[in-house]
Image 1 (cartoon, rainbow, N blue to C red):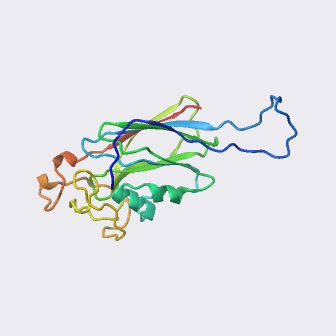
Image 2: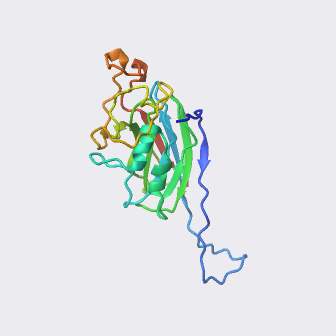
Image 3: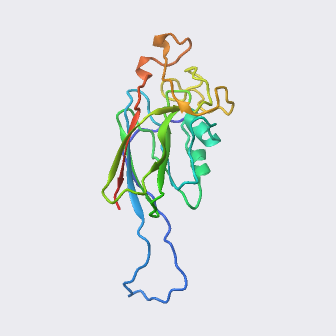
Length: 236
C-alpha cells in the first residue's frame, strides 16, 4: 500500500441542492423553505507513537447501517481497510441515499490530526461511524460505530477516546510479508481469512523484542488504549 504523507486538513463535503416542484415563486420572494443542513467538524488525533492511521472512512447514517459489529464477521470492505488501509470498498458498502460518506485525505501520523467537515440533513437519529487502520499491524483498526450525534446543538462538542479493534480476518503474525506499513512494507490485504473471523478488541502488538519469532515489529510499535481521540463539534 502506498502510504501518503500525513497532514492536518479540512475537507468540505459538497452536496447537490434539494429541488422542489410545484412552486410558483419568483426570485424576489423571501420565504425560502429550504432545510438548513447540519454541519459537523470531526477532528481525529493519532495517540500512538509509531502506528500511522490509514485514510479515514467516515459515514453519517441512521439506524439501518452498521460499519461493524463486535462478535460478527467483518464485511469485505472492513477486511480490506483493516488489512491494507484501503477505505474504498468500505465507503462503497455504505453508499446509500440516506447516508453521507467521506474519505480522509491521507495518512494520520503519530501525534498528528486530521479535521473534516461533513454535512447532512438534520435528524435526531443521525449517527457517526468511521474506521482507520493501524498500518503497522496485520488487521488492527480504530474508529467509532454508530455514535449518536443528531442531538448535538450548534457549538456543542463530544470528546471521545477510542480503542483498537481486531478485524479477525488475518492472524497476528506480525511478519514482514503481511504488514503494509512502513515498518515492513508487506502485501497488506489478502482475501483469505486465517483468524477467528469475528471483530473484537485487539490484543496488542507482541514484537520481536518480546520474543515473537518472525515479527517485523519492535517495542516502539506497541500501543495501549486509547489509540486515538475524536472531537465532534456541531458547527451549524
